[in-house]
Image (cartoon, rainbow, N blue to C red; front, side):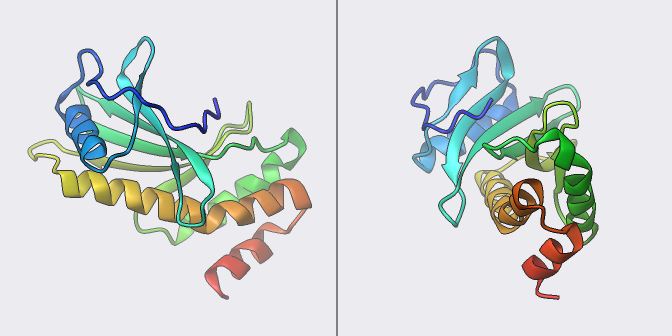
Length: 168
């Protein structure tokens, strides 16, 4: 699933709801290439580098009936099975102090990602709100991803990795 090349289709996905239409309008205005996910009208994807230059697959998922929008930054590397418990501890420690968004890991395949979301019932998503969701998502992923990968691949201790990131 780690598609990290910029995707070039700039048409609104078939049957997109209001939230996804607003997000894709923002992406177009920001010159961020994106494409729909084949067979999934509620999803669009792009590849965007975080502030460090590390690229992430970004998925935007609209839950139209719930009037909710979910945005994921997915790391290109999968966490090895034997290190998933340690990365789960890292995620728990990272999530504890986050005011918005959360890290997730799929225990079955090791996918590591950060999610931001918004419930828009009774409101309207603006381009600035879409930008804020995306920027916060990428900054959070960028801040913690290297530490998570040290836990996953270099046997770093989760508590020490978080302390190094958070300056404790």
